[in-house]
Structures are given as C-alpha cells and as structure tokens.
Image (cartoon, rainbow, N blue to C red):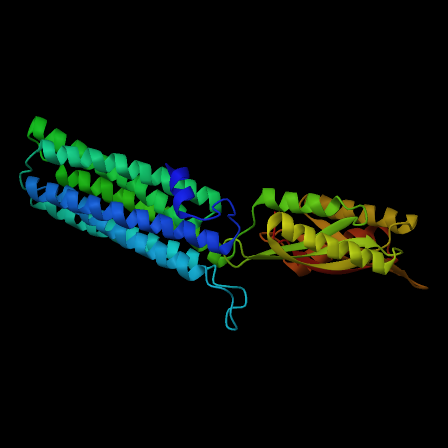
Length: 389
C-alpha cells in the first residue's frame, strides 16, 4: 500500500535527494496521519464515554495529539522545502529536525498528562463497563496504528528523516498503549478487579520513554553529531581511489538538514606534482563527491614529500612513537627543516575529541620521546582534533 500511495501522491518519489520530493513525502505522511488520527480519536472517545474508562479516554486524547503532531510534520516539511535566501544561504532543512523535536515534545506532554490522570484513577477508582463495541474499536485502532508505524518507518528509511522516524515511534507507542488499555479492560471484565489506573501508568511510562528516544534522534543532528562511519569510509575510499592523492585528513561534514550537507577535507599530494594537474584532480574529486553523496565539497591541497627517503623514514618513526602513546593518534603534514645545530620536525597530530591529555601535555610527551632518541631533533607540533571516527 505504501508503494501505491507514493506512486499516486508523490511525483518522482524515487528521487529522494530532491528537496521538493522530500517535501511531498512529508505532506503525504502528515495528511495520512491527520486523517487516521482524527478518526481514531473520535472512535476511542466514544468508547471511553461508553465504558467510563479513563485509560480509553486518555488514549483518545493521545490520538488527538497525534493529529496535531501530523500537522507539525506537514508544516515542518513544507517550511523545510523552501529554497535558500539571503538570511539562510544553506536553506531551511533543519526545520525538519525542529518539527521532529516538537513532535517529541508533544509525545512527552501526552505521557505526563496520561500519568496524572492514571494516578488520579488509582486514588479514586471507578467501575469500568466492558463493551464488545469498545473492544472492537480498540482492536481496529491497534491494527491502524501498527500500519502507520510501518508506513512512517518505511518513508523515514527512504528519505532518512528523523521527523518521520519520531512519528513511527509515536505510532508504535500507541500500539503498546492501546494494547495495554484493552488488556486492562478484559482483565477487569473477567475478574472484577479494576486495574485501569495502573495500566494507564504503565502506558504513560512507555509513552515518555518513546518521546525521549524520539527527542534524542532530533536533538543530536541539531547539536552536531559524528557522521555515519560507513559514509566516512565510503568518502575516504572514493578520494583515495585517485592515485594522485596519497592521503587525507581534517575531514569535516556539516549537516544543514537532510540532503543539505557540506564537507571539507585536506588532500595530500606529492610536492613535486604538477600543480595544475593536481588542482584539476582535486576539482574532479569535489564534483564526484557531490554527484555520489549529494554533499557540497571543498578540498584543500597539501603538498608533502614522498620521494625523500630520509623524510619518509623519519615520518614513519615519528608516527610509530605517536602510536605508542595511543593507538588512536595519527600524524600528517610532516616536514623536516635541517639547520647547523638541530633539525625541526614539523607536523600535526590528530587526537580523538575525547582524548584525556591536554594538547600541551600531548605535545610535550611526543617531544620527550623524540629528543630521547635524538637530542638534536626538535618537534614543532600542532594538535588537531578529529571530527569523524
């Protein structure tokens, strides 16, 4: 059914990197969510009034809030699809993350309100009337919400949307919540023991957990998270597939919203290479990365000595000394300048972002190792920090 809906309502639905296509995906998700959640809310509210169950009535308002969340998703994708302007040169793609965060906040709010109502029901219990009609409504709700979960999860995976992933998680929480409400009604009808309030508390806790997980998935890209390791590996392999590039470092990926990323890195090339040819290779790599990954790329060219045996031998030895301090440390931009009394070893050290040593202490430790081996060598060290793993 998902494929049929996409064919009917999303033009060019296979071009998921296109901002307008992403917007159509969001409009479809929001429209389907609004229609189905309003329908479910009305049905559950009727069942809640019929049975006098606080948990069923609360579940009805949960669906009403889900309809509001679908409105947020629809509007969020609409705004995120706007083109770049003078005030927002990188576009409005991050609005999609904000929409997902707002959906998460609504989920948390529903959890809190349901928890309060359930505790009130525990303190002041009232009889719950079991009805085959209400049970049928709840069963239909479970089936619809399960379909909505798979529907939004499918859309999320197709376009890589945190907002749709949050919506799918919300639908899954509703499946569990409604199942618990139905179970509580059945147990109460069979045993005469009212567990309506306790079931409501359990449902509230589940909804709160789902809301927190959804919020985390949208907050991380807003704050700036480590890029996907597989993506980084593919980017490095694509760059190093060009024999003119002997190494890369300082790779940084900036996320301005789904499908709106920028990347920069330093490409090491032999210092004796023809500068025009090397520049042409770098330009070609930038275009290739944009076509393959959809990421705007800016590369800096670093010339390094590759044919001087003495420099190569010293670079390997220094790299080994650095590795002995910590396996995660690497070096780049290695140069040697010899003087009458000493030799300067100039290089950058890349440390993980969570490295325990301060930059000055790390540089001093490397300097100590080098001078212990050769007192006439002096290290000029710049400590960098890795932005990718």
